Image (cartoon, rainbow, N blue to C red; front, side):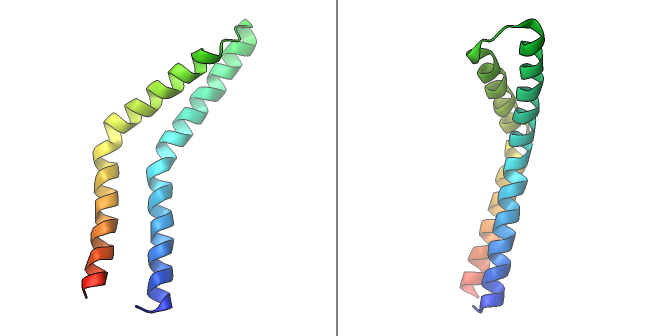
Length: 86
């Protein structure tokens, strides 16, 4: 393996991590912002309220997109193992 191939694999690995984490992070962040606005408007300052909604969103994203996430990760791992064999 040369340095160009290793650099390409690392770059692709970072892209895979971004693709896998982005849906959970963006949705939980948007739910957090919406709940913060709701709490500011209603003056309800309960810490567990935002935690429960964020946890629910993350679990739903994992249930809905978990198969796609696993396939993406497996494709990347297969590519790495194929390059190690050849």
